[in-house]
Length: 292
Length: 220
Image (cartoon, rainbow over the protein chains, first blue to last red):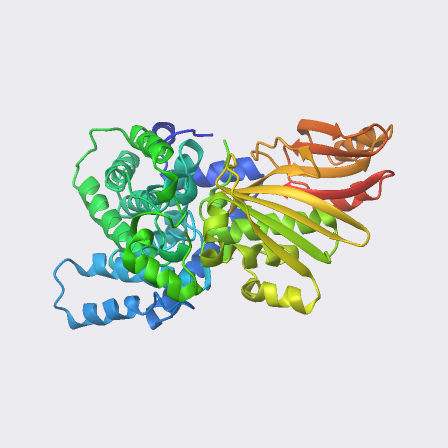
């Protein structure tokens, strides 16, 4: 069993296999399930992600009314063709937003690694699909690669906003997505790790400050930027850029930052954007009374 | 290692909006329900830390009640769980606690009916994964690394041997085991971590043994 990114990459290199393959083999080993069972289970998760994206880009609205409809706006904007950044990046952003809008509307999603950060991995996957035309099996492999890196973060740091802030959720999701994009685009296991490191470095310190305690503001837009961050970091890693700080040390830094982060900024809706005048006003409007 | 499976990371499939505050909360409720063995008539649910501060926004209250009604994390009925519980005449009480707990997402669930009650403390550690830290006053120390079952039993000779014999018959190896009791000859609890997955039919067989009151799988 690999315990950190260094061991994961080493395993992949020594066995001359992809990261996704190492994760599939470990899953079979740990659970005693067959390859077919493990692949079928992940395929089911992929299907849930696909349905959430499809539902979200048609437009949903949350019960509070705080979020919904932005994925549609972005898809329409892309169609016009006058965008500035790039089609794949914007498509990833739109599909990440779509997933989180569905989540906020209490729809069915697949946590990756959490519900609040569920948009980043599928958002990037379904955008990159348009560019790389992967097989269904390669799309399932994408999720195993993302899962392998998330597995390391969850065991060595945290994937909980209440324990580590948004860096632990959208930060982790973004790093996982970047690594998986690199593998799908033909990058090496080392490049996957570099992409994860570059991505997570740019998410360090991100607090969890949901307005009214709802997984809506700013969560949906943080997923948008998590997807964009992953896309750009993946391109950087594929270009041969490396992180001066090794991936495992970045993960460890994230963990330690999470420990020292004040409770008010860890999913308690007491600080950050939740405590702004508008944040408080929205909270009062939604729940009738402001929380102290 | 707290997380063993890739499906702890890519998963669960669930009703939004929060894996820790919705899916994890539903799982805490469902473990309590499963250990209680039937639908409770009342439930007192105490929420601590981030659970206490944000439960309304995350639907934590709805999700725990959904779990108590035996709904899984991806069951859309979770959304209306409180209404469903009210319709079924289940009395619900939510308490926002100020006490600081070891983990920010902690819930204490006390459920019961005219035949008995059960008290469970669960923590939601992220991504929908939970740990049970206390059951009916027994402190549990489960690593969460291996499949685990809880066996509530009468404190009598042979109970432990019978359970381990059944597991041996199915070639299931025990990696870690704890037995706790509050008073000699009264209620006791076995916490058993095993290396292989335990199928439901084995759980049923364990439950048929003398002096075994309830068997529940808490880690897959």
